[in-house]
Amino acid sequence: MSESEDLTGLGDPSLRSGQALSGLGFLADRLVAAARTAREQAYAPYSRFPVGAALLTASGEVFTGANVENAAYPSSMCAERVAVFKAVTAGQCDLRAIAVVSETGATPCGACRQVLQEFNAQPGQADQFVVIVANTHEERQVFTLAELLPAGFTAEKLL
Image 1 (cartoon, rainbow, N blue to C red):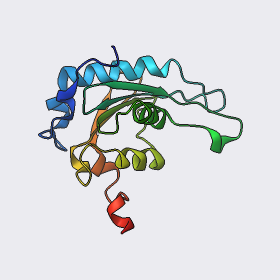
Image 2: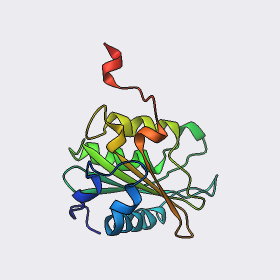
Image 3: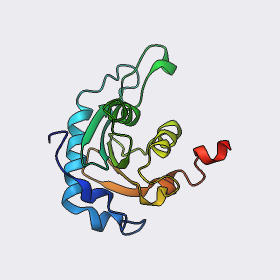
Image 4: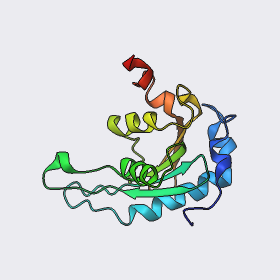
């Protein structure tokens, strides 16, 4: 999948918790496939837990990432944040959806959830950001960011 391929339907505001998977269909399949491919590039010699992510922006571009570990563990970076930081440094700050693939279908960690909250395409509406998690056995779950981070910290809370 090219990074500029149009997948804008995946971030459709009509996709809500509980009905998200049925509304995603083919677009979700393509995003998960991109995350699976990204997972192959993970550098995970310590945890042996490779993770791949594929992030959809509001413009329809897809940015991928894989986890990169370091012997000094806090210096490691999760796949989700790698994808977000690639998108942001390419000028794409409005995010719509992310697919994350790992052996077990793990959800994003707290730090990744907060970073996704920061760049949610519709601030304050985390119920419209789709998070797809898949395992290596083709099983998946779909959440909204609001389900994974119900009281996320936002810029409005700084005032």
